[in-house]
Amino acid sequence: MLVFEAKLQGQNEQYRKLDEAIRTARFVRNSCLRYWMDNRGIGRYELSAYCKVLRDSFEWCKKLSAQACQASAQRAWSSIARFYDNCKKGKPGKKGYPQFKKEQTQGSVEYKVDGWKLSEDRRYITFRDGFNAGTFKMWGTRDLHFYQMKQFKRVRVVRRADGYYVQFCIDQERREEREPTFKTIGIDVGLNHFYTDSDGNTVPNPRHLRKSEKSLKRLSRRMSKTQKGSKNRTKFRNKLARKHLKVSRQRKDFAIKTARCVVKSNDLVAYEDLKVRNMVRNRHLAKSISDAAWTQFRQWVEYFGKVFGVVTVAVPPHYTSQNCSNCGQVVKKTLSTRTHTCTKCGHVQDRDHNAARNILEKGLSTVGHIGTNASGENDLCARGGNSSK
Ligand SMILES: [Zn+2]
Image (cartoon, rainbow, N blue to C red; front, side, top):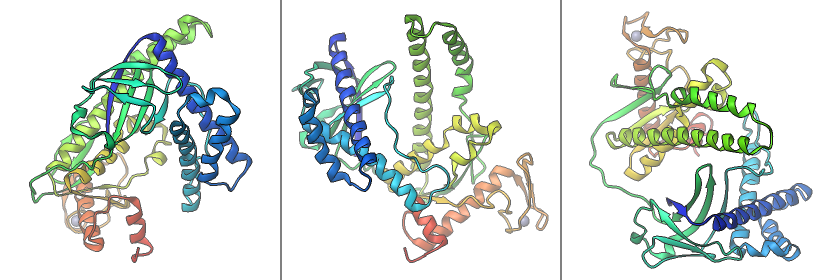
């Protein structure tokens, strides 16, 4: 599935109509959730059927196209399914009980194949469901001409702090050719560097958030001084949201570029299967860890792995920094010990470099056992307990 995004340009009046559509989608999702809470044990088909009930009982609900209604019900279902899944897997900590969505800056509505139409030159989109938001110019679309109309599976309207966007989900596997490089790499992510690889190369940390932190703080301080419910406050809230948006975009951009580069130049990429959520609980490290955005990086590594046909392996993080990458001896060290010095063979190496070599070693042996692309976490769990899976 490919996703293209473009910014929508229209009149204020049209934006208000999009707001209305987004609000209705949220209403349908929340109502479905409430219905599930009151009737535990029902499944996705009951939710779909409930859509019709909603449409019959609320006249304005019908403005949203029937398929968009279904899409909202599916959203409710996917958050329920995720919750069930977490419970079944026995995920430690919070299971993510489905929550009602509140009115906020961010919001979206999903259409399927009806309710919208692209112009002949594919630079304009017209929404023609009951809200009748009309025609918008699209800014920044990649060429949509390459794809046939039947490949457009979903269209999503997303509201953000700086405007309205449209996303096209296109049914096309992304595959890119790439010459094998016969190189393998292990990656150790850290705070001193964004990552250190098994060849000893490092990529510095982009401290986007740190840089923007001062202005973020100033803005939020000024906002707190404004009166609740005042126009001024709305203005500052929007400014703050835009700033956060900018940081998250910078972070995403960095993650994509770095991941693409790593995947393209190697035939196998091994990295630690870190549970960032547990680590973020450590207050001192928290900001830097979230900032460094490892999770996002990893997701992109796995994505590009599929695109370029490169093996990506997440290895269990145990002992990767403690073991000697030369002889395997366990050398205990605290977080502040930056150099690995082996007590057995005398091997001396930068701590992260040593860890990266261990990760690569583990990754290669994992692939040997399974013989497939072990990009999911499940494969690793399977390796520990039940190897037949
Ligand atoms: Zn050693």
